[in-house]
Length: 111
Image (cartoon, rainbow, N blue to C red; front, side):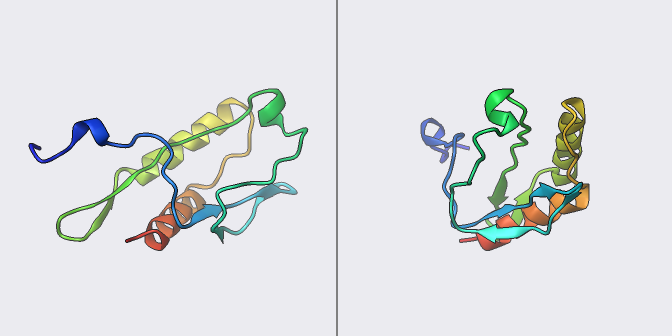
């Protein structure tokens, strides 16, 4: 703990090489898509812009001294995202889809 520079830890947006997206269209979630752009196309009538309807679930991955990547409670994060979506009447992403997308993003961004 003595070697951690606590004043320089990042808790904000951190650019990555890849991100993973899935779009909800025609009543179902699409296949995960691996992307390199940090931008998204957003329709001017998107409900998140006009009504603030959005869900966010933060998830972090850490590499141990042994080189193994650790992701803390990914299933719990998926279930919280479902609960948040349900609470504002949005389509709930399947737990398996959420987990697959997190694992893909972590693997592709490993350095």
